[in-house]
Image 1 (cartoon, one colour):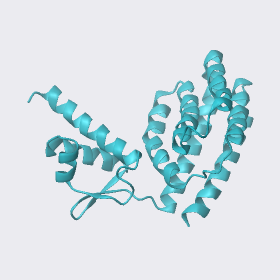
Image 2 (tube, helix red, strand yellow; image 1 turned 180 degrees about the vertical axis):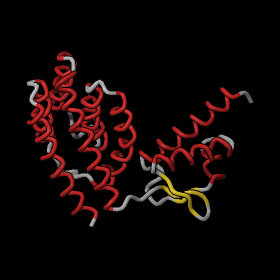
Image 3 (tube, helix red, strand yellow; image 1 turned 120 degrees about the horizontal axis):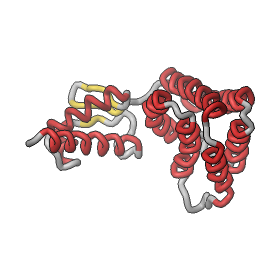
Length: 215
């Protein structure tokens, strides 16, 4: 097998395995063997081993005595993830104030305004959560800092998993929309101090909820 085909198989195994972790086909704590994974994804064990190694580096799986276990995040790990996320997003809005194109910021605002058209009866909470994560990801992208974007990309899958397990499903769409509009409006107004303060306030609420939810 040539190197290109080998790499393609490794990528396929990695992305398929990660997708099954994020959507909870393999929930936190699940014990999996290389044989099972190879059979499920119809692929040989060599790319499976490579996928396991990469997912270990991502912090999404751990080696177990008989295979691999999907990571179950402790409260300390969850809080640390959100503290890193907060720091990255504060950096992002500061850079957005300095660098972001006005048209891109207006586009983000319009996407937030579209929350009013969301049919909560037709979409699951986790589908909605993807929209909310996308808001923050777009702000990071508008920072025009590739290193920051890479760092944020390194934790966003953890965030998806944590949200699926612990986020407050009673959140009002309208409340989230107002919070997001306040943040993007502060960035549009080039007010970094206010944008950072709003993000700080939001993360305080989230961390408080997580502490109660996990304990």
